[in-house]
Image (cartoon, rainbow, N blue to C red; front, side, top):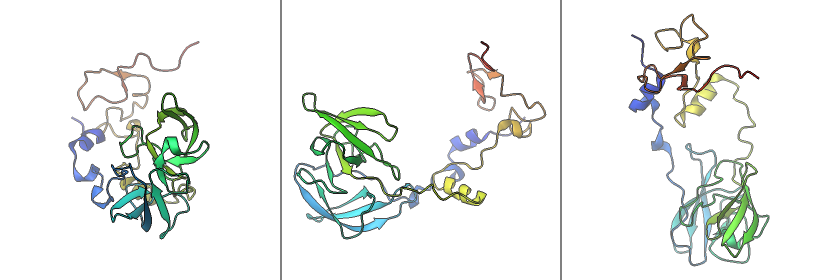
Length: 239
């Protein structure tokens, strides 16, 4: 009888495979009340181990504190604006319908009031393409170059997410990659099943071709359910 697979051990939820969320700085959401215009000052830039981009802690005029993903080029002491207004500056949080076409935006709400879901990773940005006032939709171009429509009442932050060039520095040592993956609960290195011993994986052992051209039943037990699961076909497609 073989050993348990990594996916089986991971599913149990032991500390080895849990994300170290005690070090994360919490959720980033827009404030719920967005009816009135209010200004705020960036009082601190925070490194969040659970994100690729830094956070900005903002103190509003009504003495509320919010956290938002920091835009590129912002610094402590800068002022940002929430709500309606003609001027659009870096870091301002506005409705998409109030943002001019061609403006860079990020942390976009997919639905009004959800707090921001789209374009949040370091260095990423989207562009406002056009507004359709009849349907109340705004068309934006995502970092993938795909154009999608969003409700014009959804909010977004003006600018580009800070942290561009984060991946420019290569991981010179395996230990750096190991710790970088571990901060987000990812396993490194990933070993192929055919490279393991027979006791460690169903594909292991001397029969190295197993797993490349065979399938396994959809009703197989967890310790055997690896590789191509209920595949319609395997191997090279014949012309």
